[in-house]
Length: 433
Image (cartoon, rainbow, N blue to C red; front, side, top):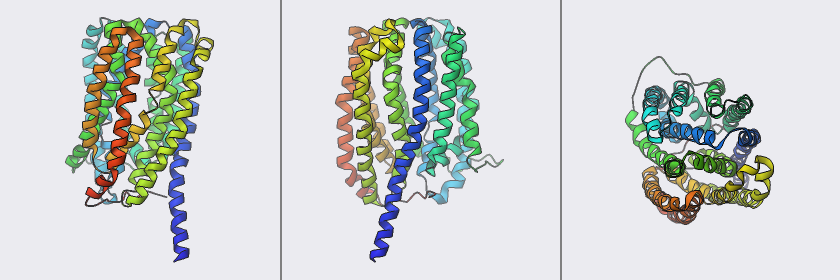
């Protein structure tokens, strides 16, 4: 019995280490991404005008609102589903992805005109349509990518994301030097999209059949509608400050804010996204063991704290020194904005971890209700803050996140045992060792 206990302890230790290994792969990928993005940000800051930055922000924001519908919960359902249902769900998901992404291509092209009319600038119509081409590539490998994450082979995700974004940044630098203005930011994102598709297609053996089927689509949609709702709320919050700043303060003011956001929060969000990608399959794999589930959750919180606190505090403290040296004197007005936004990153990964707990325990609708409330609260804060200009918008971002997100994280943590007891069955998700 003692020998068996030791074996079990070793297996548990291996599973715990897997989260750190996956985090390491994603962190290494993000390191390469950040180095290339830093170089791109420096070049863009010196070669592009604030107006070009503002135009690019409008194009990318429009694309973000449409793109969120590709994150419709299909991916997450494949990660969370039982092994016995997986093959059929994959084929259904493949067909659903083509239907959704084909529709999004048409929708994004159609809405480019009203968006241009709203912001009174026709230069953004064609770039918005060009970016829609990505939707015609995504479905080829979307199922393979979700299966790779389900199997905890996150080194493949790290490779795909690292190559795609790093080459994107290199192309951005080249086009900026060639004087392409806004297109230096927009066009590379379309050119590099096939890289993500190819890496996931080659590294996962699943292939669709020729059969068109929507069997069990209700099961996917039932789970996915709440996930989609959550991601819609996230996308709205992530871009609401851009929309309000651009509409009420003008494109040039939006350019300053967009620079501050990317130069500041971009680095912190890279670390947060790496933790987020590794955490969900890590929790799903322990759904059948309540004690192991809680251990994984609380150990992940410690990991998040060790990563996020030093990174954010170091970056915000050094901002007054590195911004004028690296990016140029013209971005000095962006420094206080950068610091405020950067500090707002601290509570975000803890709230994300709380959300993944609810997803893994079949309670995404609870997370949706919270996100609807927080989005409304955030919008009110921004509308008040915009009266004090860009600095008021940044202060509203910090206060809204600093007040609301810790309360949500604490509530989920305290109620997690009750949620787990309410589950009649916690089915294990089988993953490859």
